[in-house]
Length: 413
Ligand code: UDP
Image (cartoon, rainbow, N blue to C red):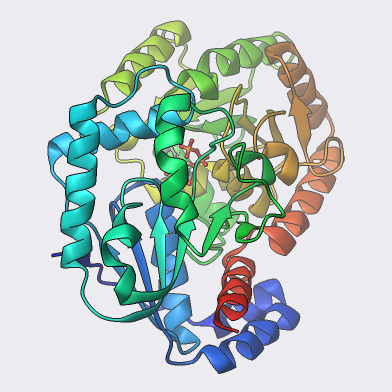
């Protein structure tokens, strides 16, 4: 009943020149005793969002080093996904949560999926809350069960977390992006609690190296004058990403550098009314300024275009007021772009203020840092270089693969 996701190929050898031999050799050493192990990843969807982006890279890499790795997607229906969206938001603090009826549906669909789980597995990795009930219903089919959480559970609504905690504790191990995502009552350092930050794939279309000419060519198609300074933020249209603050900061920049341009690139799901509303609000706030380009997938902006805008920018912003990890920051750092970002969530883990970018707390501070970078190309270059090296060491797929293998080894021994 669960759907197997068809995957492309990745070769670890292709990453050696990027991350260095030490990491890839360590991966091969760890992989040796794990060869042939049956590893199953289970998630709610194969489309959109950080989880699927990571799995499209990490599962093929696991296969490449000899694991018998697969990725299955659970079956669900609209009411179930409405309930899990509510669960997702309430686990991150929203007051509204599931009704008793919705919890029953949640348990039922999880049980149905557990019954539909096929095969015998050495390791089963269940991603995020939607399929968390699989272990309870299918425990016989996996020797080791890991729950991988991609969201911040540090400040949850108490009712849903109380319901979730016993389910998490049935797993042999749980994995979190950062120590402060772990909910109270499941402290870091406790047996089974592991901290593994996410990573980006430097060889994916979104992050592969573009020549400056190619990036400029693509940006020009969206009306950017590539001879003038460009500031970009890539983000969903969401209050926590502060698009209004981005426009305020940009306006302050143009008081001194009138030729600067702003690109706001944000994906818009057709079934996300909240996103549409905020898109509209941002659009109105930009007030038809021809130098503010507001673009989305509705203008055909996909991974390649996001790559081009990030690569072409003189400054990349991520002016979040609240943030999970902030993969857009990793993407900008990896492209060697000077990055100015909110001092929240996972961003300080990625940017050391003044060394590998700037951390800011207000639109005025954001504008000030942009002006400093735009006024001093040497500064931008040095921030970009440091940021890129930090991303190379900490936030690329091979490091993530290595961390997974270390966890598998500890569970298997
Ligand atoms: N993204 C994209 N197109 C957009 C907006 C965002 O491809 O128009 C991607 C972005 O490149 C990143 C991810 O969506 O890979 C967003 O992840 P992040 O952790 O920054 O934020 P989230 O949306 O998960 O809060």
